[in-house]
Image 1 (tube, rainbow, N blue to C red):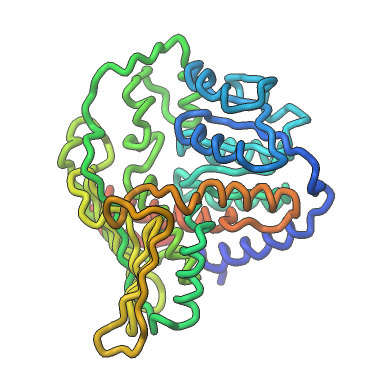
Image 2 (cartoon, rainbow, N blue to C red; image 1 turned 135 degrees about the vertical axis):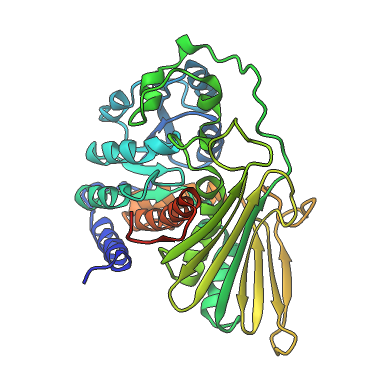
Length: 404
């Protein structure tokens, strides 16, 4: 019997073999790679700044359905870069070697598949999928195209997260029983106010893509993460980062079932997705993962903890700490990378620069044809965990993998 787990694992193995074995499109070390960027909003522009620091890379083509986003991205690209509102036009350019996709979530899979079919290597932002049903199709598309795909869960490329993986897999924590994750903020992201988006500068039909037809709404356009047609709320936007780390560190993938709660503390009648959520994800071998997220209290911030029989391992984006159990003979330690943040669990740190490291890994793999740090199958699995949590949330009952 083929289970979802065995399918993902076999797909990962197949993708690794075909990408690593594909030398027909390898690039010389001194050959400049021409990169196209599809979706040049704030997140993509942040990545473009890191990409510009990597040797042998040139951003030559830009695409966005909003004129303002294209204008803001232009200074970050090659002075001779071309711009278009139609991503198919960018993908048709023969001199584009690879693309970076920074669109809204619901466009990730359709554009990635189109890019693969056009013969491009891809860096695509997380979450990879917008729906559980999209996973099989995109895995098949990569297997056919034999192209390198890096998913934008950049924490996998951070040295201290890789060290965490080594510590856990070497048995320093004993048996890991639970994983606790959070992404808590105390910021008001909800209020509606004029955003000044000129609808004449937006190709709204192209933005909708596969989403249901609906009138232009500048709030939804700028805050798409909190509407089901375009995003998936806190679970897909924030939890997916830590779930991906947990999968990477522990060597697990899709959970068996999920139980979730969600409340509207600030966003009632404005967002469709709750602004305060929790979920418990159950994995094989009695492993449980718990996540909490809110915009109304920043306690614990953004962090992950692996709770084992011998010790607990804490990590955030700039810190790693081993805390032995009282009866354990393990030796604890604490590492703070870069400058000391204002508080543990801060959203962002200057060092390590996860985006640059992750992009560098992608560029290196485009040249070598090796599998990147965050391969496509891993992106499918981490997104699936978030989708399962949302399915439980919206149904008000336990959601089980493999059931609709």
